Image 1 (spheres, rainbow, N blue to C red):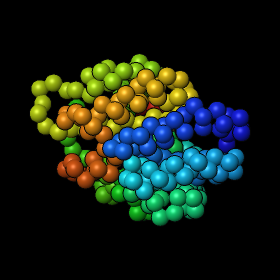
Image 2: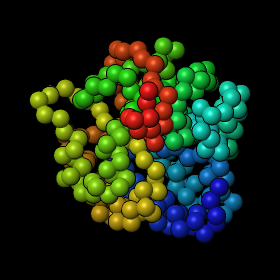
Image 3: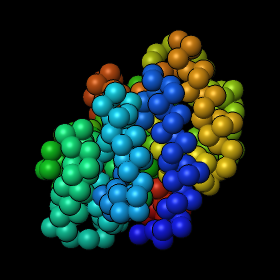
Image 4: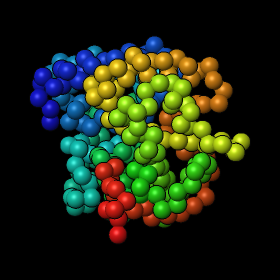
Length: 260
């Protein structure tokens, strides 16, 4: 729960400019997690233009929504019935505001915190895929040319922690630097890289990130034939599913020294 003045600052510095940038670049796509408690706050504090902007972008196929827990809970720390309740509440709240456009195929666990119990509930509730930190991956391969699956059939996606963190902390802040980090030498195969970070990174935490990085990037990518911006479900549909694994219980704050 954010204080009203914090919501106002983030709305003006981040949410509105990002929506405008996407609106002005119709080929751009993102996969978005918005927890139901934030959706309600935006409505309660009068930021309906933000919700309407997301609705428009979703109707144009530029925003893909994910499932999550409504109150941003660390799911591995709560019992299965409460995990399920949080997911159901999130679904009900976001459907109230986004209607049938909110039909998440995938799942974003708050803080990317996962466990075997989380995988079980997420799959049982009908999700096709789940995203988590790269440190959870027991079968890392770079470049990544396949999708691995949990034994229960859930498709597993792993964030590239290094590139994501460098973007979030302003270490990658130009189009050229970003694209150079995407390249792996000595391969002609298609591969994918998943970036995930707080939306507030752009404009709020890193003040110049929208005008100096995001907008130029969205302007350049449609004219390149070597890099394509996709939503997560498009990646699932394109790449083969060839390996089974049980990811490590972890979050996006987990470090190698935290693992036994």
